[in-house]
Length: 308
Image 1 (tube, helix red, strand yellow):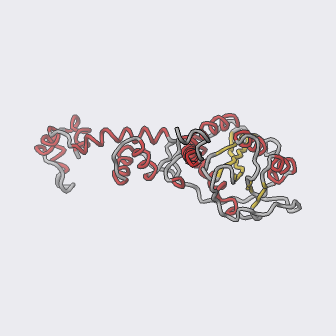
Image 2 (cartoon, rainbow, N blue to C red):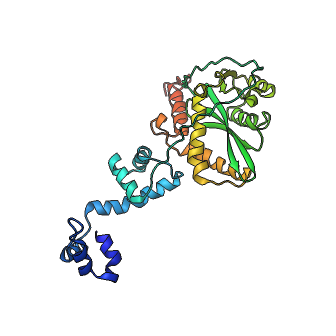
Image 3 (cartoon, rainbow, N blue to C red):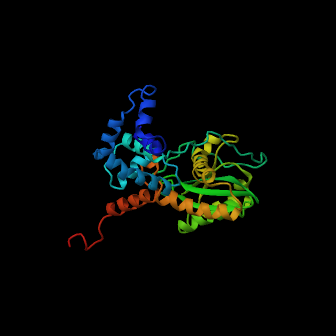
């Protein structure tokens, strides 16, 4: 009410506004009540809101404008603010920000029925006890003004880190998914012995040039069943988040190159800054760093150092 009077007092005057609206709006201020409220010092809650609401807006914008209440609450706590979840929700309303909702559409891939498929070694159990044990791969697409941009991701199931990716104007196996795989393999040191490579049964992943590369690197190929998006559900979920958090937020897209640059920035954010509910509100990099730190601390001290 005070804001309404402030906005219109120069045109109508405080007395007239209060006299006209008091019968129509239950509890509307009197002119005396308005002057008392304006002269009153702001409350501690108001001062805190004035401080935190811009901070909420800033952090929300820095994270692609996609965080809802849970992630914003976790982020504010990580920033050192002693704040509750309900208070976070109220501050988000004050700041005029909200989370985004994922699409519920599910996509399946049409495969070449003449191709012999590797068996499903995952069986919908998208868990791993360490990094570089299980990778999931999938392809999605982005419509641009100059044609489709196709995007391939390779994700480590243990940490949810995107370890390889590629954007191209073609679905050819030797260009789109293979370059994403080679990026992931380079990051892993070039030896994928003992790692399970799980994908759908799309022709680009089942092409001989790609499957030969998987085996050459030492990985074990695995695919889901035909026509079942749930058998590669984790990779599908990552594609969905990519579309929700980047593509639909920042479009329309003009060129494949524009998508490629935006994807580069998004992957860095996903790995280094984005809080993942499945990781107890940690980032993929933090999860891997904690794993290797625990592994190192569990190693016995070299001979000659234990007694120092």
